[in-house]
Structures are given as C-alpha cells and as structure tokens.
Length: 293
Image (tube, rainbow, N blue to C red; front, side, top):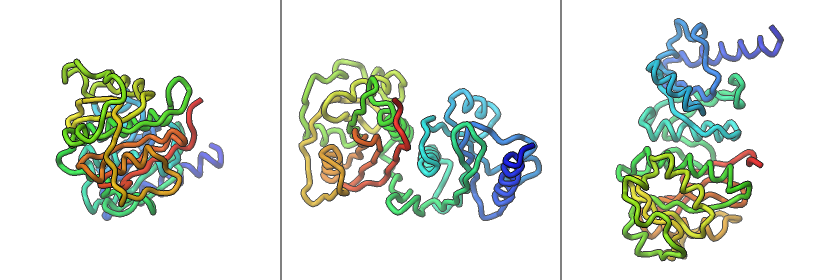
C-alpha cells in the first residue's frame, strides 16, 4: 500500500469517527466511489449516511438497497460547488431540515474523498449564498425546481453544439409573467398537451436545452408545464440592483422576480454560471470550474 493510500485510509477513518459525533445529524457523501461496508461496520454514521452520486444507475442500485441517495450533475465542478448542488438536491427532496448539522465528504470525480465541510442548515454556504434562500415556498414543486437547476447547469456546461449560450427560465406566477412579457418568436411548445410538455419528462428537458438558443425566456408553471419559450421580459424595477459585471439577462431576471411572484434561473453565456433570483435578489449561485469543449 502506498503512502498516499495509507493517508487516504487514515483520512477516511478520521472523517467517519467525526461523523459518529452525536451533534452530526447527517453525513453527506458526495462521490460515485462508495464507502466499503467494512468502513461502516459498527459505526453510528451508517444510519446518518446520504449519498450524492452522478450516476442514475448507481442511484437506482443504492435505492434498491434502501440507501438514501440524491443525483447531482456529473460535471467537474469545484468541491464547494458540488457540495452546494448536493445540499440543494437534498433539501428539495426533504432529507434535511432547519438546524440539522451536516458533515459533507467530497473529492474529485472518480476519486476517494479528500475534503470535509460542516454545514448547519439555515447557516451560510459562503459569503454570497444563504441556504435558506433556496426555500422557495410551498407553491413551488421541489422536484420541478431541482430538475430545472440541474438542467440549467447542463446548459451552462455544454452550451449548444460546442458554443456557449445563456438563457432565462421563469418558474411560477405564470399569468402575471405572461401578461408582462411578449413573444419574440414562434412558441415551439404551443399546441402540445400539458402531459407532453412537463419538465419532469427528460425529453422535454432535452427540448429546452435545444431551444435555449432562442432569444428570450422560458415560462414554466409551478407544476413543471412549459407554457412558452422565446418571451421578452418587459417587467423591470429601477430599484433592483444586480452585482457589477452581470448584464441585461440578469437584470431582466431580477426585474421580473421583483415585480411578480415568480423565481428565475439565469445561465450566464459568458461563464456558464447559474444564478437563481427571487424577489429581485440572487439567492443561489453555482459556478463552473471549466466548460466542456
């Protein structure tokens, strides 16, 4: 066994010993390299474990074993961004609650864990993002929001045919949003039944990725039904301030969320970063380490 392998083993033992602490509510293991049964044998951390994996097949395998699991995008985000995405997914699926202390274990994709973070739900992820900001209200379907966050990350990472693209996705308060916006081009979702245009259907999420090249915003109902693409958001609020360096797309998303009860996801064409707006402010930011070529 190499020195590195020995150190990895000691690091894991120390992490699991810390996870046994009675103050730790959940152990969030963010990796597709699973813990070995021998590592968990006799440890209290075994019952606290929640896996965050990027493989749907692995998630299905864990679910069949009655393990708790969430699925996150497979792209090579920084460790902090991977923790953010996993926590948001876990929150949206009801695994965490206010006040829980979560011990997060993560590392590079395909590697064993090399990083530990502790997080108190209701505390801060970093100086810009408070986790309570993603608690959007009972009117929003958590599965829909989670699916759209992951879709936005995919758009930011992949672009379209190798070219970076940006877009806006508005969710909720659809009547008001439609009244304060106008159609820029033919609506590709017009004429489809509601069952054929719900974002919980992977085929519809793929269609949204393809139609992201259109100018304008997507308008999506709280239950995930896509109402329109290519909408110009005319609602704005002069009192809304966005951080320096963010352009018209972010200003439009901030404005529409300040004047309606919708939330908006924005994919930055420049960086691929994803920002979630509510009440005119950014409540979640997810940044990429690199884009795919």
